[in-house]
Image 1 (cartoon, rainbow, N blue to C red):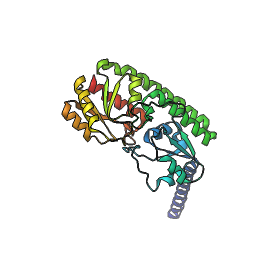
Image 2: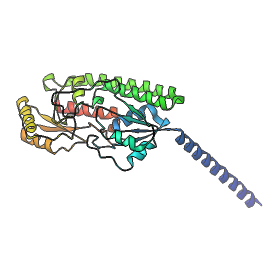
Image 3: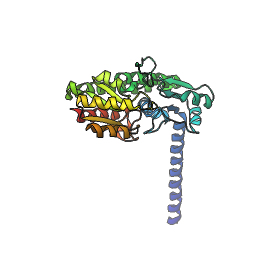
Image 4: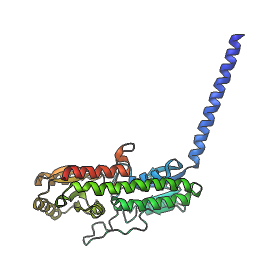
Length: 303
């Protein structure tokens, strides 16, 4: 008799457990279905969207970690991801010259939000890839990215606007803190040594915002072919200024800059994150973390 009672209660407990788990799984599935689907062209935009949308969005990125958006070749599955999304966040200023066709191929009227809306891009006489799309390297401009992303999320999901606004306000405080941290810490580098030599011309906004002269082997776009004359001019400039360091980038082939390093005696001062963040789940997998890594790398090499 006792055994039967024990077995009866065991069955009841197992049933309750399964029912509870089923309800929990159903709740998670419902929450996932209620999230808005957001796709971003690059990891920088994807991270800012995550900081504001958090668990109310399901996020995807087209150019994954380490991918160069200038030379990106769309994959067959990309239009499907775009077609299944509620929002498409793009940088604009020609960085993703492939995105318009992808959106057309996806069909339907996708809400495309250009996160640089309201900002003006730099141009130069050479025009290698103008206009310069790398506006996120000025942290003050990254705040505009965040604002445009906020407005896009509210447009797609007005029911959660207070949630998004709270996350946005908290993130803006973090960006303000980052901007001030950079301004304070670059003071460790003598002004005469604030010269940044990089693989491609992605850091002009950083230079203007934080007091660096910036020179690069390639133009604004990595699609620009490196000319022999460009290499010679850069070598002469490094020797003339007596520069001690040059910097390679995670999303650009380092071979030519390593060759210039060998010819000039300027060591490779480190690797900078330019058009892509680091691996997800790492410190450099966030915009703020990658910027801090870049600044610390530059300071350690140039101070």
